[in-house]
Image 1 (cartoon, rainbow, N blue to C red):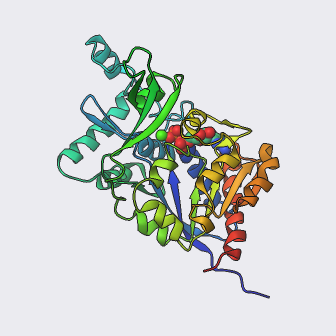
Image 2 (image 1 turned 135 degrees about the horizontal axis):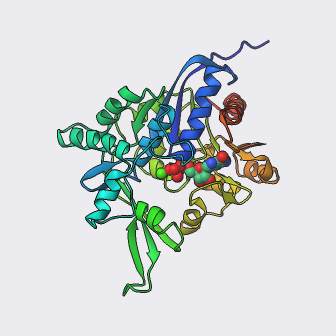
Image 3 (image 1 turned 180 degrees about the vertical axis):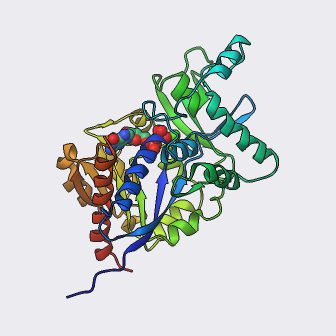
Length: 346
Ligand code: GDP
Ligand code: CA
């Protein structure tokens, strides 16, 4: 009988905000309760978080996805909204509105502002975003090593149709597209400003290269995972790592579960389906980033398509309704990693 493989000790997850954070919560719950097959009870999780949503507003540097992961795993999140601080108050927003200071569409909560003040102060003093994130995590103790994808300024902008503009289009920051426009105007293109010149933050490439398992949570394939993969060196690290790479579909039955992935997948020409996203990421055997892909039970009919495209695929329940359901998703991802790991040349 072959001996059991050694337990996996280091897991790396590429995460956006709400979808990624919820998945991480379930993953940590699964590790803590010993429900992940072949994963050590003391396994360490490194999170590479998207920073292309970041913006400067009222002189403050705001990092929505880093903060969503940090607050969610640190039990500081507003659970209903899925972002921002719980027990938040909004005096600062009201006072700014009384001055009629623009922009009014991005509300900063009072508690949340403290995070942005600390971050901005540290950046002004010359610390990198990685160092700032580490410092903020000393308070929140998220139970993961949280790394920004890059310390450089990278911002997603979206070209939208605008009949009032001479060119017929206008380019807005991703946050303006999502928060002010509610992703309700047609997105024509996604531009990731500063990405080509950006470098992975310290530790990111190593976290992928040295991992025992890499997971892509059901985060937005365009403006979360897509922007992380677009930092030169990160996609290459995924293609090259000896660890299996398994992803979970954010698209269920042809729709996103929340957010605006449908609009943005359409803008970049990817079919809005669990199979479309798998093909977009591509099989590692052909220079893509996936060994395995989980689709929701509702998409069981797509499993054969995904496998025909060279990615091992299983259908399981993929709705993150609570920690137990999400831990079961993480367990299914780990089980799939075992299957593909066994079949991969090392
Ligand atoms: P954001 O930065 O806050 O937009 O969060 P992410 O990029 O990490 O995740 C957003 C994605 O999570 C969306 O495309 C959703 O479809 C997906 N998502 C949210 N909840 C669920 C869920 O319960 N199940 C699945 N499969 N996907 C989900
Ligand atoms: Ca985000």
